[in-house]
Amino acid sequence: MVRSNASRKTLSARALGDAQADKRLEILRLVGREGSISKAARSAGVSYKAAWQAIHTLTNLAGEALVASSVGGAGGGGARVTEAGVRLLAAATQLTAARQRTLARIDRLDTSALAAPRTSMRNALRATVVRLESDGARDPTMRVVLALRAGAEIASLITRESAELLALEPGLSLLVLCKASAVRIQRDDGSAAAESTNRLAGRVRSVARGQARDEVTLALSDGQQLVGFTTESGRLRVGRKALAWVEECAVVLALG
Image (cartoon, rainbow, N blue to C red):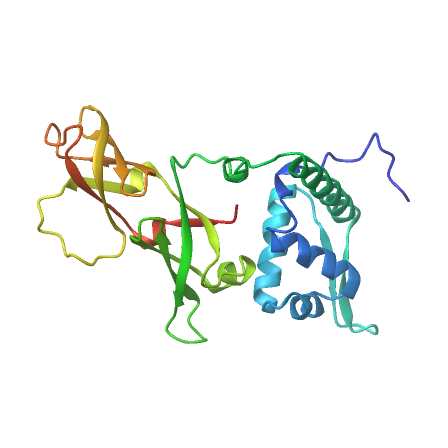
């Protein structure tokens, strides 16, 4: 029986993204075409596990089941895109077309700021992938080393499936995100190692005094800004050199 529009659940738009930048939507389309998650994974050039991760993430964001799968049986099992999945893909196609029409009307404008995701994270820095490191094909994690515009390096520790779905490779430009509360800022007294990943140098741009710690905005040498916190209350002043540290597992990567 076909559900009426009145009884249809509203599909959350949070699952939608730019199809060119979101491999999850590509995998969902391929499931509809191939009738199989494993075949969709092969066509997309990702592992079966990564394909399932993509579908699970989209389902969580959409609020409805997007794929119905069956295991074994006379037909050998398979997968199909649900009605909600079909509607999501149709909406993504329309949004992509509208985005392309809008960008075609814009001349000489960097639209990077329009692509920034809306999150609670205060820090979003432009960076380029330098290399990907792992302890072998069975290592479930991937260490992604990135370069900021001034040459400083920052690394992110992510899952192998996330690296596949983002199609990470050297030279790719993306956004580095991290919470301000994950960034530790201290005075630059020259004692830190000259070469240290995730150690970013800059000058204090502003300080907001707090009860137990101060919020500091650091101006990096490439013009970008980083917000973090220091427990050295009163010891960091505007214009002074300072260093910022962030744990690799706290660094999030986003295409944009």
